[in-house]
Length: 244
Image (tube, rainbow, N blue to C red; front, side, top):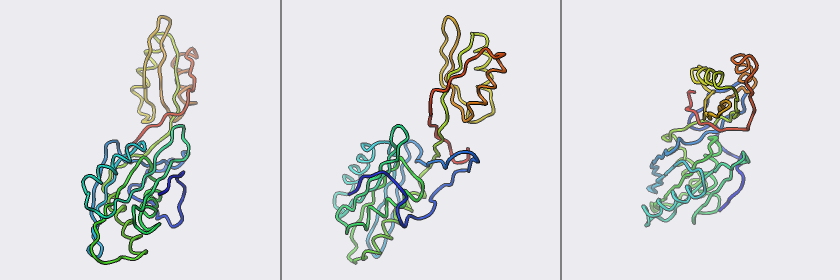
């Protein structure tokens, strides 16, 4: 069993399901299963059945819940191998886990983890249940079978891409704030969003996310004749469909 920051494991396969549209100035976007997404698939290799389950997992508790549910569903299976990659608050390296669950060391959990990492995924857990078919597969056969089982289940898992935007506040008087809010809400820029509006006795504050803080500042200055104040607060993650 392993638990460590996820890196680029040796021998990891190339890009997996779903490839995000590139952005010229943005770092590669991480991929995650859509919230609530689950998938199942089956692979048969020399009469051994490999039943693969994949799900969104934002925490270790989510991942262990998938493993526990799979064990409960298949109590007679000889192996319940698992792998997951979980995001870390604050943007640190994701944490990776893999378990061979009784298979020879390195033949199950690691190739499963390699498939997740090679697909650029995080916030994801997979469990592969094996029913032995009577024929030994050997080390190479097990590595291929567990990796292919994960590849098969990922093919049916809906994905989103993660984009880190900047969260800002815009402060203005009531009339100007209302005009800025209406302008931002009607904007055709897909990565500008008004999260919250707070009205006070002396003015209004808008919480806004954007991929272009300088552009937001310039636009609000234009709308307010320089009276509005835009302040950067920090990063804000959004999840987008693969065609956004």
